[in-house]
Image (cartoon, rainbow, N blue to C red; front, side, top):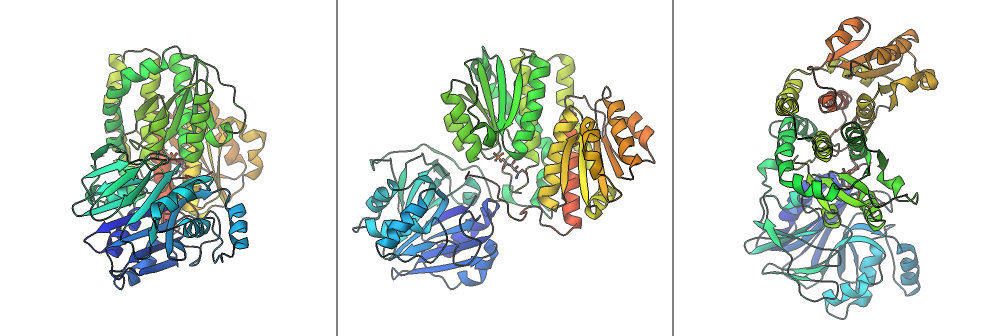
Length: 590
Ligand code: AGP
């Protein structure tokens, strides 16, 4: 949700900033801009509507060793050259990730004080405030300004004539990177992959001054502080496409490794998790979008293995419903990025009401990890495609282990065998899956309905989200049994119903749904790991037969099928699956 990058060093700032912005593009891609201080002290700005590449023709003309940039996901003001960052006022230049909630009130006062605004953004008020608060010291001006802002902000500020960047972090992520004769600041790790050996994660309220020579960090009172330095393990190679045309396909191919790595990482946190969960009487899963869908499966695992009440809820709904939380409740906050504002705020609320809170996240040291009692890692590695693929499957794998651990089941030899065989089964699924015919059916359809019961219903919801997210084909997920209670009215010859059937006990009931759709002229596809189901429905429906699988682990296998379907449909329709329209990967605003 907007990516920002700053550079100060002996190299070419414009090139470094541009490269960083390309790597942060998954955070927003409706407009981009940069500001670079020329050796003379003059600041050169370029900002344009469109993806980061719109800046490329201009960077050769921008000389300077200190600069900062922004790639935008619009919140206030439509995507346009004028609304793109940086915003400036009186020699102050600002890039901002977050939302200034009291901007309207501030803007009114600033206009009354004689300031002139040119954009529709909330961010522009920051430049004007710093300008008015600046008596020569950019850091104290930023400090004074911070006290006037309500909302969330990762900010970088430059001032004409000064070869350094002042930064401020509050409820939006920001890291600094220590290089050789050059230093960096950025929203997220991918921007700094291969650029520097060490990074520090800034805490809420931190300020920093970045120059070629040093990085100075200050707390909210401007007292100098040290933040832990950690290895920057992410390399540029790990961020490459590895021969794939899109990150979505590359990341889908990384599912088996993700699951294996997640199993391995779990051993390191198992004891701590058991301790945090001891005495738990109810579990609640919170997340947004795909992470919420993973929570729906986590809920089933806890109900089945531990026989305790379990719920799953959209984090955005939980926050505002005055939730009933008691001691003895454990809340799992599921989030790939660890940055989703709704999930973080919901987790904090649950914690304040007495729940134990566990983060299930793909990003170590992300914001969520700093406000919970325990962290369960999802070891998917960097996920660049806006649509979550490998992280979703990794979340399910992690939640499976959490439930088994809580249930106190030492993994039996039978379960151990199933788990150890899982990565190979996932690999086999990836190698053999063929959804081309179905993808063409979906691409031509007027609507796609994903149906299932039990675990299959949870995956149906994710299949539907994935398809609409990357292909823009209208789609919904429904419980197969609910079809006859209303959804059947939507079925006609232009619709495709994708029915997931992986549990033999529920198969006859789900097959009823297939027949009901066929009787009304709808097209049907069946995703199943049950050969008997495939045989019965052959000739009536398009069949996607998956490897045989234990019903509790089937969501990991069928997830690959629905993700592959969404990807292929998007490609057929000429969409960019990595950067779907209107979306961004880390939703750091409410
Ligand atoms: C997934 O394909 C979506 N891009 C989206 O639903 C995502 O899962 C959601 O925004 C939550 O993100 P998080 O896991 O980083 O918290």
